[in-house]
Length: 267
Image (cartoon, rainbow, N blue to C red; front, top):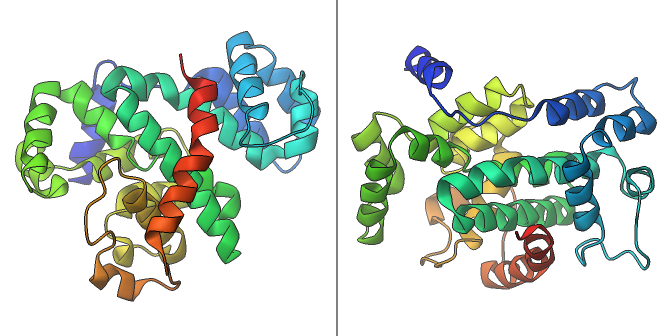
């Protein structure tokens, strides 16, 4: 199966690719010898990327009292890891929007915000990566649409009448969005923790990164457009190493916080 999925990724036409400027920026962020000036010089080569990042920095989500007009100042105020979240948000928006429309993009932003809120409130070491973990959790769905949109439409219909999405995807494609999504983020050379979150966000108890993947599981569930009950699977909740006393209150907070990001990047 592993080889089959790798082959599918390699041979797929119209495969989403990470822009070269973004890859260069992520490499700089991942290099401990790099500095803010190198990153600023790289991002500034791309006017559209710079404009979108500054839109986000000046959104209500970050709440700075005055307008931030340069990438250098944004980096000085936010630091490299938060800038990484902004870069990824801008980079994956077009591929999600073109494949799945606004619904997947908005859900992914809410899940990203939910991950950040949870990781910070729990004081977890993964908090720096949390936003990106949530942002990319469903990236495999874009691959399924590229592969065969009509089949995905059929799966969506089955899910609406109560079918389990992963089971339906396996039946129709032979693999599901978590498996093929993992292959894509591995191709992008993103950190292992993000790969694990993409692969196991429906089944965190199967992952070696339980805390991180559990955060994505919870954030994914509470940020669905149509909430299903019970919100969290009780068997999975028993395996988590933290408590979520009020999922509905968390959902309301995440939806409210996400509005400004979604609005800032709206076309």
